[in-house]
Image (cartoon, rainbow, N blue to C red; front, side, top):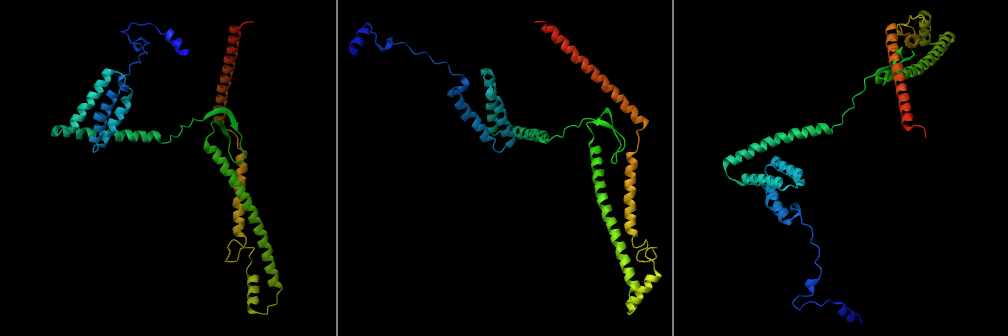
Length: 304
């Protein structure tokens, strides 16, 4: 049944026209661009590029330059430009393969120039890859003060705050903590030494002089007064060293208290006052600009 229908619907053609020629021809494929045509890419690669690299094996800078230039020009799609580019490297390949002494001298000269070029380029790239420290902003006065404390004198407040100020306050704070702990330790040592000296004095005074050692110690105790500093083993007294250290610590504490009571000088007050005026003017202009922008936006929108 199906074959009969197909034979009925088959067109009646003249006997000299084949049925296959009557079929609708398939659409032609678009033309292949020259830079994708195998007739161009294969000869360029195997008859020019690869021989160039093979010939410049003993000329590393020239070889590097060839690779770089071909990498840069691989996106060329203009026939005239590609023709000029290929002709230039065909000439170079002929020069490299030539045995003429003048050509060899030109090749060596070119190699020396490229060595210098690549060295300077590599140095510049190395400098660019090195981490660059950000340029710090110049501190500016904000119009306010750092009140004097135990750790800093009167200072103007700046933005950004210099690292030196924070480091100074931090170091003095830690030094004060260490000094307080050291003073407590020395004071406890002084108390212990007083008790120990009193114990030995009472022991020598009450012990009977039965041996030469005890009689000698008793004579030393009577002839030399440790408290008044007459003992040559300790010119400042038995507690002189600790008392000197305690005195130095107390002087540092007193110096800190004087620092906290310092006042601002007139020159600093004038500088901070001018900075405060500039800050107030800036804030005023900023508020006016924002207000003007709101008014313009409301005028453009209009009542709905």
